Image (cartoon, rainbow over all chains, first blue to last red; front, top):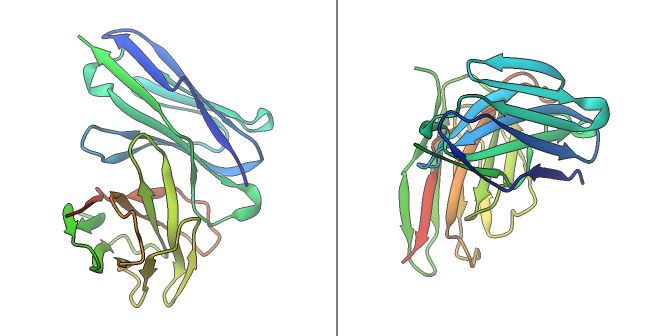
Length: 111
Length: 115
């Protein structure tokens, strides 16, 4: 099945710094989502982005489907950005089925 | 408010006991999913259902059972056959038809522990 790899596994930042999280996937996809899991376990939808670029406040994401990767940018990071960021995809040949998750990037932002 | 409600938030299971986790959605979504998350790991699929009265096994279905009698409800039973049930369980739903690729939305999860 499709493989999803996220990097880096861990990231430590000072408040105000910028960061880039990467998601590589091994096959064509028609669904890619980025999530933020907060310390209480809630999984928050950040972006639905199977291709192209989107922005939402200090966060933006880009997916280059032809090269099989997606990037999540966090600018001017805040302590509330701490948590685990997951990338999840659905293989193009398995439309409508479940998401395949990477292992996540754990972000710690200190003041 | 529209959303996905999971209950209870915390659940404890005794040895040999079956327990049922509830997932209800009022988003009028066709598809619903159950995922399991172990510490430091991503989510893995247990079961999913694209339509009422139909469901498919995921990668780790052994020791679990589901039903989909109503569109808005997709309960998960953790049976005594599941030898390592301690985990965080997340339910999700997705709009559109059976093969839609609309985004999935998640409930707040249930933490299950063994007594």
